[in-house]
Image (cartoon, rainbow, N blue to C red):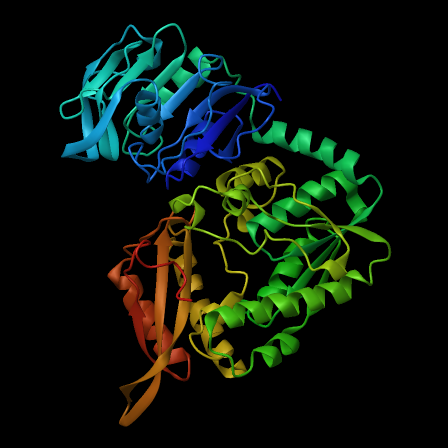
Length: 510
């Protein structure tokens, strides 16, 4: 591909947002750590430098060699990237005396410059930096300012190298997408050819060439990623794809049967394996969240390996790994983007499985996976499904796991999720679920005193799970849901609603 964009990550929490905005322009881009610059840059038509928690004035400031990029390819430095371009080319960067965080408005714009085409004075931008560029390098000129930041944007003379001290990738920068389009399409000449249909066509061709007539095993979870991966592979290799859906005993109520029924109508070769007793026995008496995850992971691999051996001559294991998982697994920046999220899909397989790995979605973000699924006519019921954690209800039951607790939480979760659907609220929510807390509380039912469980309901809105806000569900809905849970689920006498955002809280409780 000759229309790629390279994003060098200096550790900013916004780096993935840059990539998402570029992809929204139907332009393919890749994120690489600043200290792992690709040796071959020929496929990249433009380069973007991300922000960073570092200061260019620090001794340990990230300082890659850009001699094969600057002046040779269109280059855009964002925040730290702009300060990097200024500082290491003769400019002066100092600690800012005024607060340069949050919303600001452009007070000066050089409209004649194609970089600011269709962007006017007054346009809102988002600042987030402690340092500021006090003096630009000699061979540059100013192209935009805000009231508090004089050198908000600049350009190097005689080359398509730009620096901006604000973040066009965040929604608060109202013309951020326009600015990225100006740079990538109008200045760098990058073709807008990255579409779901084009991805499906090229990926199916690649999978056919890579796999041939080999057999592939895929562990289905019922979620968006594994489903779309399965449909893609089915398009490429048909009957050679063998899907396995494991019931670990920690799924939602009736989910094992419901999901298998849905997959029947999709033409996939799916085998359901009920290993719930094996998982629950292995988890007995264990309360530590990390240990619970490890037990579930270990037993899943054991069950999956048993089933894989029943597929004669299987050569490949397919996984629904998506791009955020890949980015985090290779990040070497030490910044927030390296620690915000990790994922179980990346990290390899036990040696004894002896299978090659194929990951058809590893270059896609979650919203792109949904768009690709839609282009292949995957149903809205699958594509619109809320994310559900791999360890299932095990990390929504705080403390040890018992069959009784799983049954209680399945009923509570069922009432909550069904209520969201019935009230037309499900699609307003990115992820929802219930937590069974390790506390009992006093209650009164009829004339009797009770001492029973407390459950917490959680509903958040988010784009990718890296940040999330709690959803302001109607009081009438919460009231009805609480009453229904307490009246219908034996063992529960108190319901609370979690109004914590991420950060500082996480979406799951464990």
